[in-house]
Amino acid sequence: MGVIVQKFGGTSVADPQKIHNVAKAVIREKENGNDVVVVVSAMGHTTDHLIKLAKEVTSQPDSREMDMLLSTGEQVSIALLAMAIQAQGYKAVSMNGQQVGIVTECIHSRARIVDIKTEKLQKKISEGNIIVVAGFQGVTPDGEITTLGRGGSDTSAVAIAAALKADRCDIYTDVEGVYATDPRIVPNVQKAETISYEEMLELARVGANVLHPRSVETAKQFNVPLRVRSSFKLDNLGTLIIGVDNMEIYKPVAGVAADSSQIRILLSELPDIPGTAAKVFGSLAKNNISVDMIIQSLASNGTNSIAFTIDADDFDGALKVLDEVKAELKAGEVLIDKDIAKVSIVGAGMVDRPGIAADMFRSLADNNINIKMISTSEIKISCLVEKENAKNAIKALCKEFELESTESADVKGDLPDV
Ligand code: ASP
Ligand code: MG
Image 1 (tube, rainbow, N blue to C red):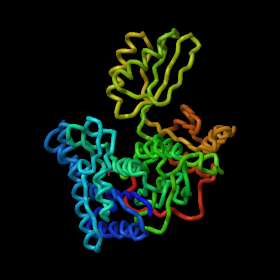
Image 2 (image 1 turned 90 degrees about the horizontal axis):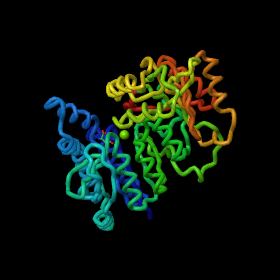
Image 3 (image 1 turned 120 degrees about the horizontal axis):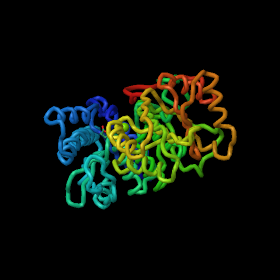
Image 4 (image 1 turned 45 degrees about the vertical axis):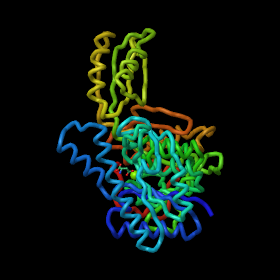
């Protein structure tokens, strides 16, 4: 007999009928002889509605009160799911973050979990209950309610699985597993049987929107085997996410993703002296602005230009900072390019395998796609392209790295925007 943690997202519990279906999936796991803890999100678009409501009351809602408000969404779904399980003749008990003892830092709206006290949870499990836990929320040591950031229920589930040393954490979702890219762009894209934590993290960072990145970090840290699987096809095993050491890797590239939320900025005619880059990026960092890709190049007149990308949300703040930097360094111009997308290939199999970057560049060139910037890490290569070319780039790269299959992906419900 094992311990299984399951997680169901908002679309899986969007109405009473769906809640009954989730109850069936939970009971099925219990009937397999396992102890089951099930973590749920708020019903449907509840969290979005609550945020909208707050914004209608005030344009700048207090973050403590936001957590108080948003945490109610999950409290509704856990009570209803516990009732649905009980209605099918099984013992179930719902618990909110505080009742479980999910202790977080004292930061509202994006708190990290620091500890999970499992005594109460263990006691309820040993009494034969299925435990239904509110995702996305925790409590500070002072008893203040916190939330973990949008999509945080995945992280709640993995953290509970780690604390209970569960045999597996199953994340049930609208899709059948982790696809090599967004199936709305490449309908016949392959689904991965297994993928490593490292690849999953890189894919999440470069724009694939399957799991909350912190959930994968936690799974990696505590070695929790994680499955992404369909809440509509319970017999399908989906995709297993495990440590790279436990995997056989046949392919250099596991996935392709695009991120259209960045802006490119170019600072021209910077003095070619020590401390220039430190000044530019130090000033941005002081203002909490993260930078992603960076290129510095030397012009023929002996000055430097530096191009880099930032998140579009940080644009206004960055412009202010850069105007000051420009004046201080007597630089040339600040040029802005908003029509960009970062297209990345990710794969643990590209380590020690030369030629993957060249294959990527050639495939883009064959499709007449110009590359504006390039950056690489051990298991990732990213190219900045025109926004309008992003989808074609993804299609081309899926073909190039043999990530297509003969079947179309079965996608239900709402997928996040590309
Ligand atoms: N309900 C929260 C959200 O919509 C948490 C989650 O669904 O994971 O972001
Ligand atoms: Mg989610």
